[in-house]
Length: 417
View 1: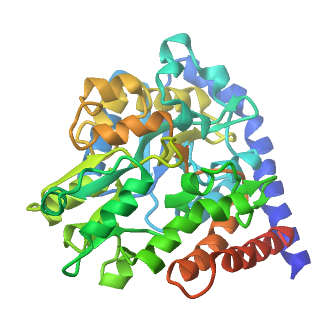
View 2: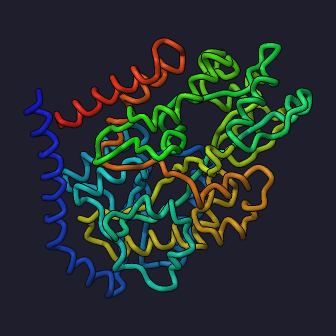
View 3: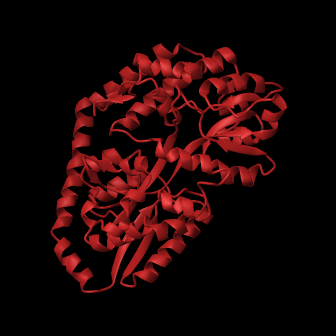
């Protein structure tokens, strides 16, 4: 089994690298055609969004084509198994010119050589410094930039105004205050705090005592520093009994649990705002920056970038598209309805999101957020973490025991790659 997994991994990397080489031979010819002003068609691939988001993207692409009459954009939507489909197409030499890449998947795909470094295409007027730094760094490896983030969300504290007022509770600013507030808010079938017990929501907390969840591209979450940082989350559920995870109250996720009034506070992202407006319009709530841990601000950020296929034969046109979509004008159109937040500080300010009562705390967190991304083995590491952390959260076993077992399993799987 070990040999088979090793061969499979090498095969993917080798095949992707081979497709890169195959694309290089025609680059000069393609570039010449573009410079002669002939009509060029490029392909943009991504996953599907809701109808409103699709309409915004369509408008942004139409605006791009109007400003670049020599470039046509073919937009392809991959509805299921996006990364599996993308990797297969890249291996087969049929990858799109430009495509979405989640920061979570970026390290692994960049490692294969399938993503084009973009630094040589960037001109001074593109204003790289305008991007929120943590979001940009998610697509940088060893001093090279492989993508530019198109949008993002951080996490913020969502709180039910009525429930906090009735309990005489102020909006908590520290994690200790949140735990104490939860005790006063837990009554009449309502829990003080709704939790999503997974690494994607708690990575910044796990590392708040100086520990590393991932070290040398291996699982390190059973370290004493990480366990100490996470123990209060487990204790609040099992000792205080003032927190709950969605399934325990018949909900599917934190936003639903909050909207149903089963949790007075949750930590969620920008996606919860349109959801609550549509599904629970009568819920009176506010948002605030995530409470500090050990006196330090922290939150998570989730971002997606536009990247270029390194085997593309139409790289000049591909860059024109990326630079427009992640430029100030294109980004303003794409994020104008608030479904996604702009990764450029100037666009967030122009649209008023930095001062928005609900989105302001989410925007404020971008400059200090921990991006949901790490080394190439993070997918293996987080799967094993989540399985065992949930068991500890639910009181089925001690946290230290659960995470030690999960770490061993994760690192065994990494060895067998």
